Image (cartoon, rainbow, N blue to C red):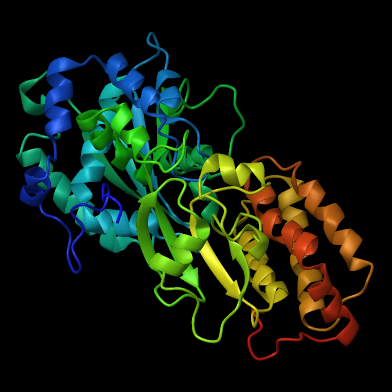
Length: 426
C-alpha cells in the first residue's frame, strides 16, 4: 500500500547482508557524494529535504549539521543515539536488526557532511545483540572499503565504534549521552555552547537518532523532492517507523508515511483492537507524551498536526489502552520509571517525581484524598522548571490524566480503591 524505504531490505528472520544491501542501491549514495558533492552541499540537500529528527525532538537534521562552524576545531565527532530506553519505543532495535549497513552508510554520509572523522554508536546495555551485529558489520564494511582510511580511494577517512552504554534513560538526552561517552556522570548540560560547537572533548559533535541517519542515503540517492513526496500531507516529509503496543491484535513496528491517520495505523496495520476492547486512550509518541482521547482518533501522525492539538509525535511509539485499563495505574507505572531514571541533578526532577509517584500510588491503592489533585497539578507545573526535558516529559501523561480522565481519578478517591482491581497497572 505504501512504499517501503527504511524497511525495503527487511527480512522476517535475519538481517540483510552487505550484498543484499548493495543490490538495492546500498552505498551508491556514498560513492556519488564522495565524487560529486562537497560536505556543505550534502548539508544543503538534507536541509532541503525537510528531514526532521526521529528521536523525539524533531529538530531539522540539515540545520543541525550546518550549525557546525566551517572554521570550527578538529577532530569532529558524530554520536548515533540507539539508547532507546523510553517505554514503548523499539524502532531502532528493529531497524538495526533489519538493515545494519543502512545505518553505517547514513552515519558515514553524516560524518562527511560536517568533517567528522569518528562516530560512536551509543547502545543501551540490554541491546547486546545489536552490539554484536554492528561490530561484525563494521568489519565487513571496512574490508569492502566503505569505512576506515581513504574510503573508496578518496581522502575521506571515517571510523565507527560501538559504545556500550552503562544504561539509564537519561543517557538518551543528547548532552548526557556525550558525557557518558567521555566517561563522566551522565548529567545533561545546558547550552550554550551547543554540542555542534563544543561537544565531545570540546570538539564539534552532532548527535542524531539512528532512524534519522537511516534516511540520509535514500535522500542523497533520490533527492529531497522525492523524500518530501513520501509524506501524505503538505509539509510532511518521508516515512516514519511507528511502534504499536497495547490492546491491539498485531503489535509491532510499521513503516508508514508521515501524516498517516492514527486510526489507520491501529485498524489497518496493527489489526485493530483486541476482541471485546473499546478504545479509551492512546499515548501517541511514547511514555513522555500526553494521552490522546478518542476525540482525536483520526489525527494525522506528524509533527505539526499533533502539535496543533497540544500533543507531540515524540518517538511515534503508539501505546493503546482500552476501557478495561486503569489509567491511574498505567500512569503510576510510567511515573515509577521516570522517578527511577532521573539523574538527580536538579531539584524539580529529583524531588518532584518521587513525590508525584507517592501521590499516585496512594490514589491507586485507595488512600487518595481530594486535596491531592491540586497538589499534583502544582508539582507537574514545577517540573517544567527542571534542567532538561526528562521531567516535563514525565509530567505529560500525569497532566493529561487529570485533564481528560479526572473522573476516573476521583472514582479511585471516592471508592477508596481501584475500580479495575484485576487489571490495575500498579
